[in-house]
Image 1: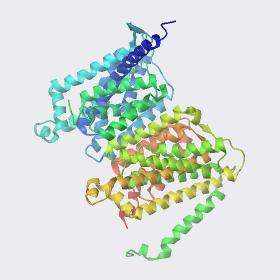
Image 2 (image 1 turned 45 degrees about the horizontal axis):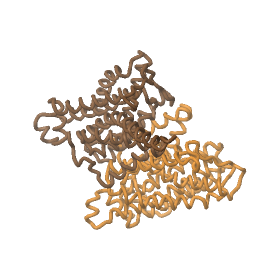
Image 3 (image 1 turned 90 degrees about the vertical axis):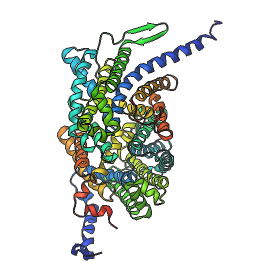
Image 4 (image 1 turned 90 degrees about the horizontal axis):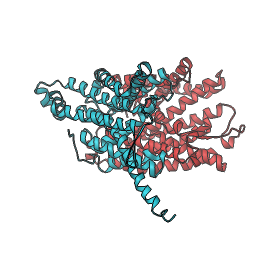
Length: 301
Length: 328
């Protein structure tokens, strides 16, 4: 009984640690969504309001592959990413390219319309039901000391961070990646150097949305799939991108981890259903007081 | 100015309007079905919402993606005051309108330093914050279950009517109010300032126009009208929940009405509502209202078409429509 004074205190620290770990794992997935968004913005100066819907399409594709072929999300991500790369390039050519360089309103409204279209097409074909992908490791937990790691969440974190890292390597080490960065920084000079900006735009949009869809794949083992799920992620991705600085990839990764932790701590210590409130309040404050992002300004790769 | 023969005769110009007024006043008594009348009320309602949005989103060009939150701020107090304290809606809407105006004042000063996508995102986040709070304080707001107003027979004091006609005329008056305010703004000094801000903020500022002050005033007017319409929504539909009065779908529908019709025009939102609402009804009829997705697919496609092919909205396709955008 005399230990009851210290008991809750020790528990509190553990709860904080656990909440931080959970937040970091979710933050890793947010990072993969946000690097795609920030890449599209950096290269094309287009803010993609339909980004969340591509996360949703990734989840739906993964769900379908699971139902039809019993495919594990860890395998289907290898199919989802190339498929969505092609879809993204097509969408960019058919729609987005028409508003590149147009007023902000045209871009916002076109991508907003695209998001409404995608959500409701999926709603039309799949109905509003919440669907889940059942994997053997769905409920497994690793215990590391007193901290618990949910296996599907840890795998999602790991895969998402791996893909974010691969994007980084692609942009800094390959000729194609360097071409993308050139178009992002000095489009006229890049054109003079023989880089076709239209191809680079299609590539950037394709990569951006295929990473979002890949994040959708790894979410499916622990997150319900339904038509309007994208709306949740698009705002988070924007918060992350603004926090890290628009067009800034390392900033987006750090911002995503910070947002994941903020969300998790708010859910733990304020109220579960207010988790997003803390995130949005940070968002508005950052927008108002430091719109160039926490890490400073401009595009950084 | 009267150089064209069409405009020279005063009678020739007013006659169609008088005819239109007579039709509008007589229609609710001769329509064969209640359903058609409800559709008309819906058209008026969304046209009015579109007008209210148009003041900040169209004239001033400040894209607001969170306007539903102002509607919720009008709707919830009206509903709760009626339910808990028996305050009739025609008085009960006032606190909500005051709250919306005060909120618009602070929100405006907070976010109107931002431009383009940053502004759109912060208004989107604002709408989400209000929605999350409505869901959270479920003891007061009913959370996701919403608030239901019981219908206890026709009672004009409480704005409860068994027949459809009274709502038709109330909504008509509200639409008239929104049109009148828009018309006033359109022709006022502030209206010119707002259009200057929309065309080029930096140039407007260099001319000595107070950007923040004008944008915030426009948002306050727009929020007040939207909140009044929120009060009407409760009285008409008897049910509100965070998704129906504060969802992003509603915010998008409001701006669609204005944009499809023609941004920054007095009549554009009416054209938009006359197209969108019947389309919604038709798609509900053909695809079943359970598949609500169908009507939104149509909206999305129309919006894409308008953005890609007619950025000033359908009003610019009408003869004289483009002129009404800039005239006087």
